[in-house]
Length: 229
Image (cartoon, rainbow, N blue to C red; front, side, top):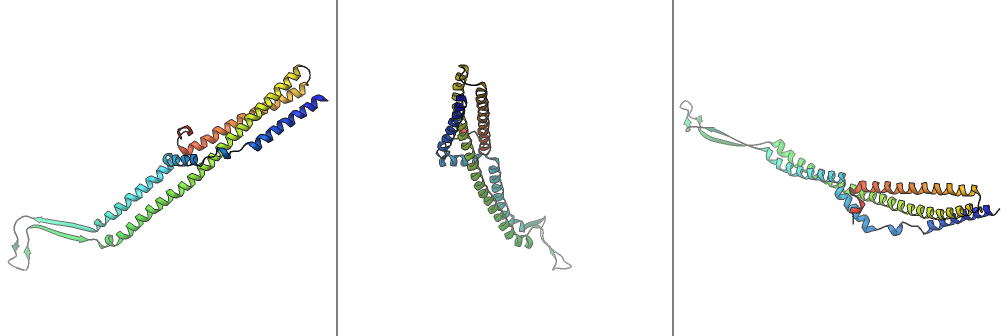
């Protein structure tokens, strides 16, 4: 029956178009190392956790200075003031009384001996803070690349779905024309309409995937993609 042969030819034609589009479609030309580096630099400036790690470094650095200054806590200066002049005890000449200022210096050996260890610990905490930041920068860069790859993949899939939908729409118009002339059955025409509807739904899903992938990427960037030139 000619109508069945025509429908079979139509399905084969659409299938070959899809396979050809898949063979030609590639996300590699869309990839830009320079642009990805801009995305990573933007994330390092805007992402809240990056700022938190920098705040930890600032706190650790300030703690080093504070701990070094704590050395003076081991030294204690005191004075006593008694008005008048110095007197000698007539009963016991060895015992005399001094009037005026009396000053003294005291050293806390426990604090003095423990201070170098405290300074060393504060410096190590600063090193750990820097290492945590460096480690997260590596993790952030990898995550940015992954989400960027997914984003351009979703765009490529949307282009493929759009092209496939357009091709199927042209075929549907041809079948509708033949159906209206009585050269095609209603079942074949209805089947083509259903296939076109399914392809439209796939296109809508592809569009949603693009928006989702973009939102995931912009979450780490802290800004819109159009703001990054």
